Image (tube, rainbow, N blue to C red):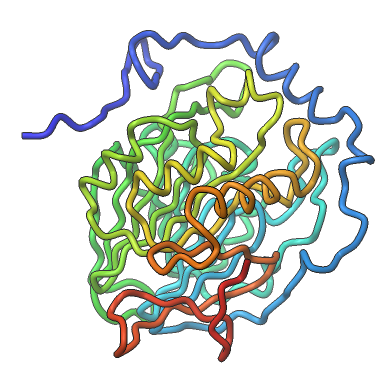
Length: 347
């Protein structure tokens, strides 16, 4: 039997491995937040185009549709079910405002059946956004181990906790669902914290969504590690990988918890996935990166490592609010991605 990667648990806290220790909030987190504010005005984009591409979401779809709302927030519609990933629709804080509004507002969302949370950082588990979702009657929330109590205190009813490699399948969910859908919580190299005293009290991770032999991987926040290769071994067919590409700088500190664009491509190759959609860039100015630096590095590295005309792997750079549709063709059984009626490599 294969030995699957597991988190290390000690004295009520989770760690990526036995050698890891709890980093000081005063000397770790606070300096990183201060650094992200340095030279902020000079790092902002000078124009809205081509970063905005708003689309009206459908109420439901049998054919898979992915819409990038911004940051790590996606709406995935498939088989009649609407899945929302790491929702944040407002500002991160007074000091960290959104660069652009969300691609879909809370009011514009179709009925949401399921919310997936990768970890409890405020840019992935935003309280105001989650409370705004309570109006959806079929709402189910899938969270890492240790986060369920946060939702129960706020009177969320259908909340399920997961540990790494735990899988749950639903045959019927929502008003439009048809078929079977599965969610598997998977490893990531990161950390958790919402207050001064709860660091690593809950788990963090990534997600695999499986529907009709189609696999969507959502990496959450993560540093580069062997977990990508192990996930690829356990899931030999991954159609779409939603991969973070920033923040990149300061690299000495960020590399412990965030892949940069180069490492994201290596993780994508380790996974053996077919389609790459970047995330965790372009919404909040984190780290010390210029607005589009993660994207520029991604494109350069993609041409270098994979090639612009690759037929095995395809890079799809979405604008905020842009949606893409996934279809199977008679000519090629693998998934193809289309932008509206015109199929293209959005490079």
